[in-house]
Image (tube, rainbow, N blue to C red; front, side):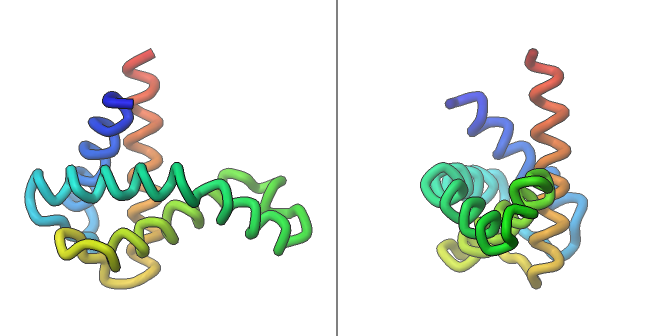
Length: 113
């Protein structure tokens, strides 16, 4: 769990460095964002994933990678609304951030295993 938090924090911080429409306020902002993102993704991620999967008549389940990308963008926008330490300029930037954070998380998982 701690490893996931650290990877998420690094992902948020690197994403903020790469994407101009995704801004966090320093390391504490990245940590707050990572914590909220992790908690909300754990609590609501599967529910949103299931709703999208059923709503698309199963296509969302077949294209799970794209559905999770969309779920991450939705959760990031929710986190943006909950904290002042994260600013996302639009949903397009949230989609980009979701992709960037997924790449960082995947790379970190490869390095840690």
